[in-house]
Image (cartoon, rainbow, N blue to C red):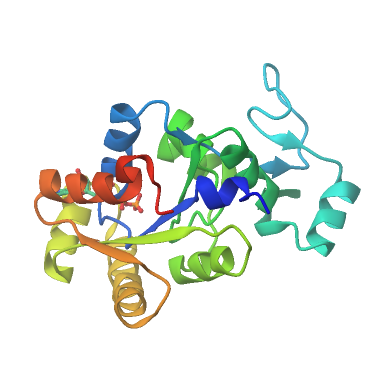
Amino acid sequence: MAPSATQIHRPIVISGPSGSGKSTILKRLFADHPDTFGFSVSHTTRQPRAGEQHGREYNFASKDSFLSLVDENGFIEHAQFGGNHYGTSVKAVKDVAEKGRICVLDIEMEVSLLSFALVFFLGWGAVYSRIGRLMTSGNQGVKQVKRTDLNARFLFLSPPSLEILEQRLRGRGTDDEESVKKRLDQAKVEMDFAKNGDIHEKIVVNDDLDKAYKEVEAWVVDDGKYGS
Ligand SMILES: Nc1ncnc2c1ncn2[C@@H]1O[C@H](COP(=O)(O)OP(=O)(O)OP(=O)(O)O)[C@@H](O)[C@H]1O
């Protein structure tokens, strides 16, 4: 039997505590490899806005068809915000592989919708305001992808220590005191899970940024073998 697209272009899941450097490293990876990666398109039941195109910004769906797909277990995850449903379908990730690209799923602690296109093109602020916040832990997102037949590879980006993570979160200047504390608590849980679980194939410690970047790049791009 011919290998499936996701067996050739295996999706990559990058998880790690908030502030571990995922956005910093991914931004650089996409800039250095502009034709290698693709982004999954999320589903939504909200109305398209001016200029939005079906299949580009979102897969616009009726509530009935969205809920049928939920029943068929077609979503890696889905959620409701402001009366509308949003979700990342397994098929949307497979579509990226069909186009010969690697889909990168960046798992957030709070924005658990796995929509990388939104993050990449609109920036974090837009995603927060657009999708809102979900209290799903990063571990949950990792497990949800693992349960699918996506054949994904899992990389965990770890800070060198919780003390350094705290410094970076404060240095970033985007989180208030309560948010920093919450992120640090969550970081402990996620780091334990990555170290002691059997899902992550690769753990990269982001101490020196250039070194960590090269390690991620080598594993992800993999001389075009993409883990196969
Ligand atoms: N190796 C490094 N050395 C020093 N600072 C770093 C390093 N890597 C990232 N940073 C800085 O740490 C902060 C957090 O990084 P970044 O925002 O990329 O994390 P993140 O994992 O994407 O967080 P979130 O999940 O909350 O979006 C940023 O200010 C970034 O510039």
